[in-house]
Image (cartoon, rainbow, N blue to C red; front, side, top):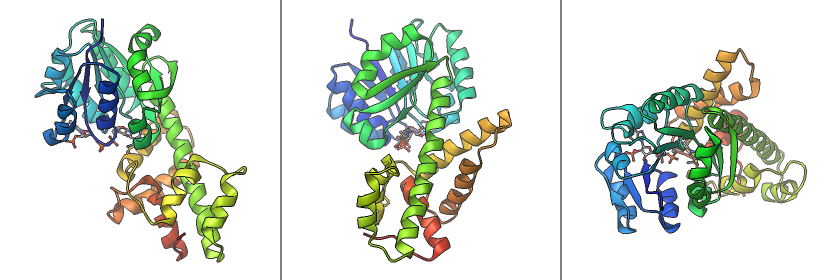
Length: 296
Ligand code: NAP
């Protein structure tokens, strides 16, 4: 039997993911708060529902891809939320990046209605969502993951079962720590080269292939050299993820000095109204501190 898929949240990530679900041949029902964002998927054959509840009524597997913990709580547990339309035996797959603790609370609430949950946040950015090459980090029951796997295979390349509910989110937050510290190291290297009067594009060409090589150097540095700070991944969402990291580490009394520093530096971007630029705009904070601009 072909599973009927529901999708709530058609932002930068959700919309291309919806296209890949359709391309893989699954029937798809979608809902987005700003309804105009559903037009493109409607033209491609998706049914457009009037609420998350209605999405659930038409679906066996419901994916949520919204912003933050309260947003997932609202579209799943709120008035007109998924929980009010989901039948026993269906599955909620939250692919947003949210709190591991809130994830466990939502999973418990759904379990009372015999609705299973996977937390399955992703890495790979807008490009990964468009190309269907996301990394998917899954928390929840292994048998439920096997049921959902064909859908994940339409969205991603690497699907890893990390553990019980919440562990997908723990994995994603660990990923974000590595992402921001890579961004910081890239930014310092480029600012140093520029201030020293080097041809930064030559420096980039040389260091990309060596021990300093990173996803950030390959994907973000060329955009920085073009002074193109379009997202990708918004500064506001990056800060949301670091806030989740700081909250979780505070609970554990765990020191994360590099992450805390980057979180503070990025507040400067927020203070300067740069929240909707790509997360690699972090370099602008260092540029301001050092009085140099990195250009190709
Ligand atoms: P986005 O473009 O800002 O889209 C957010 C989506 O969530 C929009 O559809 C928005 O609806 C919806 N939404 C937010 N709050 C809502 C609420 N309270 N009720 C209903 N709908 C709500 O964000 P995105 O980049 O797609 O990111 C989505 C999730 O994926 C986030 O958790 C993010 O951290 C994660 N993620 C993003 C990337 C990336 O590179 N972009 C990579 C990995 C993971 P409207 O259209 O009405 O605003």
